[in-house]
Length: 415
Ligand code: FAD
Image (cartoon, rainbow, N blue to C red; front, side):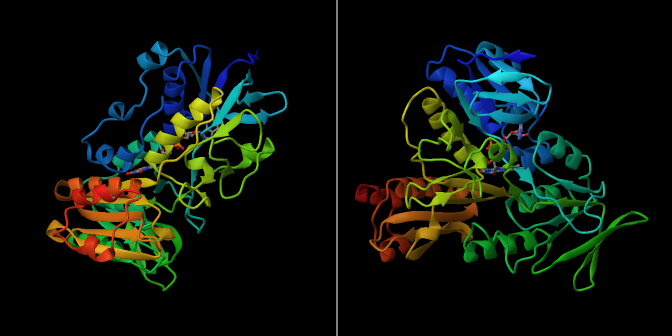
């Protein structure tokens, strides 16, 4: 079956970014057809609750929806539950796994990333789970009950959030991390130390510098053997070792790729009429111009709006600074801007053991910040810090460190 309507807006990937882009096309005034193609059976939904409130039972799957069936109908979005298997950039059409061919005027690729899996022997046992979608969260939730033994592989955000949720549910939790510290990729060492202390205080056994070698079935669960010969017995293993964008579709259409699909500031790929956004893309940093890939809610949310404008012929440049949060127990972590670009840093102590680290360039302009502490106590400070970073405020390190200086007062130093 063919639907070669060359005036359609077509979105591949009905996840966070794809769903938001479909909404934005309508709110930007597009009255023509919108096709939203995704291989998950659900309408677009938000993933952050999957490792947090959904596991602990304080949120339902329905409450994670970005677009309900009614909203999809009201917006006249045509939904295809199918996988896109090919793009013909010259003919401006895509092929779906159900045999349909859809023509497009503009195409958005928002296919996110695929979870990495454990490649060790036993890594494919049914007790070894990953977490990316609603189905994964439902499968994991059924295995988290008081006394159940959960082994988390990977001390990154998702692994640690699941560890915290599982402790709240009364599970025995062990986290195995290969690096000498937690959250290595994106979080400064002092904050990672605070998070480590919190998890250990909450009863999580955290093993750093540990390397899983194999997993075997036992009489009552599974046993993971580490490279030093020690082992951990568990009922369930949750692998949280990151995602990788699936670049095959883009490559087959001749799009330029690196660590992600390469786009310019307008989120346009190397092929006319094809845009890409969300976890999938590498885009130029507004601070450095260097390619950046983000796997965050904020990135998916804000790039969707820019991509939609430009699909309709606009010339909007993506200029939002990176930002993400992670909730663990009653604590929150936030990272804003690009700490990696800093020439120096300044650390401010917050209430109740919390911490806020500011990152400055050589001219003492803020390029980033990272905050950690009890969610209820530090929310206001983190919001102000984010505004300071967004406004690229200039401030001397000793002023930033001093708790007597109100962060609000620094807003007038905006560039
Ligand atoms: P996705 O939301 O993954 O959507 C991509 C969609 O495309 C998927 O439905 C996929 O199945 C589909 N697809 C892929 N290939 C094809 C194809 N060929 N054909 C059709 N469909 C296809 N971020 C934060 O900032 N803070 C948090 O606390 C946080 N918590 C998270 C917790 C979990 C458990 C997870 C998984 C993510 C979390 N994130 C968080 C990250 C955030 O959810 C992602 O960055 C965001 O979902 C990315 O949106 P996306 O649209 O790019 O990708």
